Amino acid sequence: MGDKNSEVVIIGGGLAGLTCAVTLADRGVPISLFESRPRLGGRASSFEEKQTQHLIDNCQHVSMGCCDEFNRFCETVGISAYFRREKKLYFVGPSHSGKGLSTSNESGIPFKVNSFAASSWLPAPLHLLPAFGGLSYLSMQEKLELARGLKQLARISVDFNNEPTMAEWLAEQRQSQNVINRFWNVVLVSALSESLERISLSHAQKVFVDGFLRARDNWQVLIPTVPLDQLYGDVILKRLEQKQAKVHLQTGVDRVQIEAGKVVGVQLRDGQNISCERVIVAVPHQRVLSLFPDAFEGRESLKRVEEIESAPITSVHLWFDREITELPHAVFVDCLSQWMFNRSRIMQQSSETEFYYQIVISASHNLRGEERQGRSQKEIIAEVVEELSQVWPEARQAKLIHSRMVTEHQAVFSVKPGIEELRPSQRTEVAGLYLAGDWTSTGWPATMEGAVRSGLKAAEFLLDDLVRPESLLLQQSQTGILSKILFRL
Ligand SMILES: Cc1cc2nc3c(=O)[nH]c(=O)nc-3n(C[C@H](O)[C@H](O)[C@H](O)COP(=O)(O)OP(=O)(O)OC[C@H]3O[C@@H](n4cnc5c(N)ncnc54)[C@H](O)[C@@H]3O)c2cc1C
Image 1 (cartoon, rainbow, N blue to C red):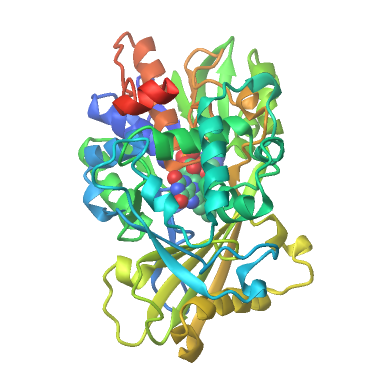
Image 2: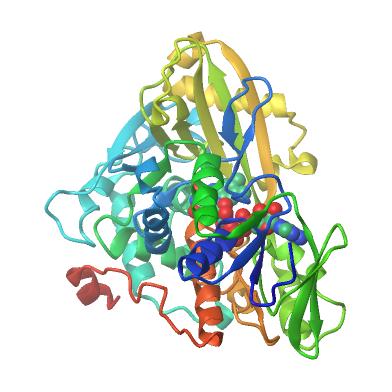
């Protein structure tokens, strides 16, 4: 691997590290990327499912129209054609606005599939009004209550040093339990992978402003049509190799060596030392401090990273012997299941005998081993299948050929009030040391967008230090004129 001081070492081949690698390699900066696993992509990657022998994603990843930097990165590396843009969302909820019971299953009200799409003529932020107005599971009074809540949320200025949780704020706004369960919970828990009792008001505000109010297409969802491994593992790997970037898989880094306030090298887990003057550490927040010496100037300012908490996401993978619905996806309202992805349709796989669906349950704190309330994985899968059967009776006739439940316990960082104080800048106090990762300071929650932004910012700081300054992030998100006027966005 040589002793090349001019080479930039990138530790971690998740989206943050890959963004740094692509950005720097495109500009002729020599790089070596070290990834401890056999694959690139980090948390956004795939694995071979033993029984079906298919390459499946550890969990469905989606992007949104508002993810400007991630979407631009996909164009840069040539993978944007592998995402399908959903211009219509399907919300599955009770067919009318019955109140009181916690789930629509228990209430006995039949389910209805509500199509949700933007009006073709209304400008942002009014473009989704007719779609909200048409939701079967909210009464007119609840829709007005919701409109009042949304307007208030868009207009308030949040004090980051003393902000409430979203649950506290909704209580202050006197939003009813039905509106909370059937709207706020549905949108925010899947967008931020946390429960309303933990989500900070500022992060909730960002979801609605960026996703629903700022510009017309921001709310649209982009779903990969191939396993993530083919995108980040194959296409990006090839591109990096073409640019003479060195990618070392299954090569973990043990330590970043720091002397007299500057980076002097890294030590690999196999004991090999590599001299270098610039390192980008793009590992998850739980791993970052263990890579540094016990004492160095700048450690104190990084220590708060240890206070960042994580939230789990569970995916339930189901293979049926027949198609249970033709819908490409569905969002479940007030159920255990939150999103259904019809992977066979999305991937355009035409098997006559095997139909693959993936159900995502974000903020799955109470599905964790110790908190499952006595339920086994088998029982949780059965509950999910029962929910599908209530919506699509075909599922009751279908044979479940195979199932698998995967819980990522440290899927994302928890967007609790105060989180922004714990997220460090990509530039550190140590000369030549940069950080990247969705958990660094980007203002975004733990998303592919956040990871890409962090990588761009780290690369920007590094190029600045090489006296090659360049603005790498888009200066501003597109904002509709009316949104600017109404909400001063
Ligand atoms: C279940 C789940 C569902 C999600 N759903 C979505 C979604 O729908 N949409 C969305 O936008 N985001 C989603 N996310 C979040 C998204 O995956 C992350 O925000 C993003 O991938 C983080 O990228 P990263 O590069 O910051 O970190 P990571 O992907 O964690 O990459 C860090 C890399 O560093 C490597 N590493 C660690 N230590 C070392 C070492 N010592 N030496 C070398 N390498 C090391 C790791 O192996 C890893 O590959 C989801 C995440 C999970 C887990």
